[in-house]
Image (cartoon, rainbow, N blue to C red):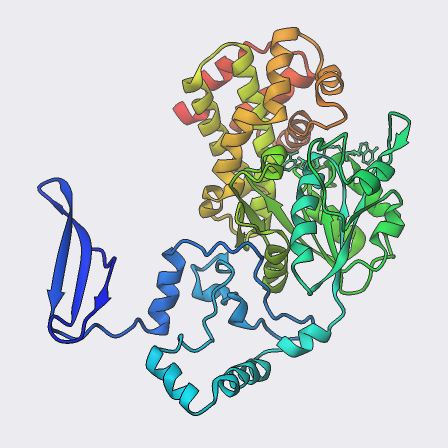
Amino acid sequence: MLSNEGVKRGGSPPRWVAQGTCFAQGRLELVTFASTQPLPPPAQPRDKGRRHLSAPPRHSSAPALSHWSPGAASFCRHAGAQPASGISGRRRGLPAGECSDLPPPATLTDRRKTERRGGGTRRRRRRRNRCSVRCPRRQASTMPPLKVCIVGSGNWGSAIAKILGKNIQKSNRFDPVVKMWVFEEIINGRKLTEIINKEHENVKYLPGHTLPKNVVAVADIVEASSGADIFIFVIPHQFITRICDQIVGLIKPGAFGISLIKGVDEGAEGLKLISDIIREKLKIEVSVLMGANIASEVADEKFCETTIGCKNEKHGQIFKELMQTPNFRITVVDDCDTVEICGALKNIVAVGAGFCDGLDFGDNTKAAVIRLGLMEMVAFAKLFCRGPVSIATFLESCGVADLITTCYGGRNRKVAEAFVRTGKSIEDLEKEMLNGQKLQGPQTSAEVYKMLKQKNMVDKFPLFSTVYQICYEGRLVQEFISCLQNHPQHM
Ligand SMILES: NC(=O)c1ccc[n+]([C@@H]2O[C@H](COP(=O)([O-])OP(=O)(O)OC[C@H]3O[C@@H](n4cnc5c(N)ncnc54)[C@H](O)[C@@H]3O)[C@@H](O)[C@H]2O)c1
């Protein structure tokens, strides 16, 4: 196969030389070609778009700024936000930093011509003018900056605050101050908010990491949320209803949010998504962000990916600007329910993986738990989600990647292993092992079990159901293996 690496232009024949690699008799070899034919014309815009998709994203240290204004009908594509339809159907947002509307870079001859006419600056001015006609770039700079409020300050909340605070400092689209609501606690005689605001470290939930100075801890949720345009919800799911209740009716018109919360709650029909609770209470649009994102690794800036589920393309792009970094790469898709339900259900599977570790089963067993768990996740999503469930979403970071990382590294796995080895209750282990952090897996299994029972479908989801019965009904943990042996997938 020939690659076109190292294309060089020449004057007289040969007019171009290409170096590449090819497979010859099973070996990869470097080959050189020369031709007297003119160089092929550059790719047309349509082709460029395609190539762009498969090309690795440009990782710039600064998040790309799209020239968006809330009043504008659409994005300026100078920021790289091309329409979703031009991508791959359901995936949204191209890697930041590309600019498809700008003319191609001037050749040396072009530049000389322009210089001779003394039009270097005029040319640049013309480009700028073209931009302001096509998009609301100038208007955007006069728009009031968007205020961001983070609701939550645990392990994940603090890690995301670190990213957000830094990204916002590089942008003039957002208000530089990020208010972070903190559930007030006393640590060694001092208020946690005071420690965060003076020492810029969440010593309880993310010790060892400096938070940007523009992240301001606020203990009062009404004060923290006042005037906010964008809400980032990142608290354990058991607290979301109570928090929302305190700010009902106080939300700025036009505000919108994103939920990073993994879990589900009880609803009239058995189960409710956390984003639905927020939507219904606060009457705002809510997207979701889920992925293989263990907070401490994200805070250490170790490379990972994540998925945003978002129906509103503009919001998706804004969230991407707020949170994407070279080491935290975001894909935006539109089936939000599937993204969110993946984030909740994978914690149940992780509890099962922890049981297997506690019983000293090996990696093969864990792989089977992951696979069977994934099958139940897909089946449950089809049963539960509104609208079509795209299997492709399970291949995003929010699906299989999050499942793997949680079954190897997460707190649910860790506590479940200790549950088997020590014989202590889940509640006691949560208090002993997690230093105030909350478990999601067992509680999610209880919510899911309730719904399966209502629908008379417990038998179809033996992994989910057995995790619940072991955690809450005293079923023997050894029976988890017989549940795998008799799984409907093998019948
Ligand atoms: N930690 C991770 O690696 C990670 C990664 C991805 C997603 N998530 C999800 O993010 C969400 C938040 O998790 P986290 O890791 O930031 O939190 P956490 O479990 O580390 O911390 C618990 C948080 O709850 C707060 N809290 C304690 N009691 C409270 C009360 N009575 N009312 C309100 N708040 C109270 C604490 O102040 C603290 O901020 C969860 O849904 C979790 O599943 C976590």
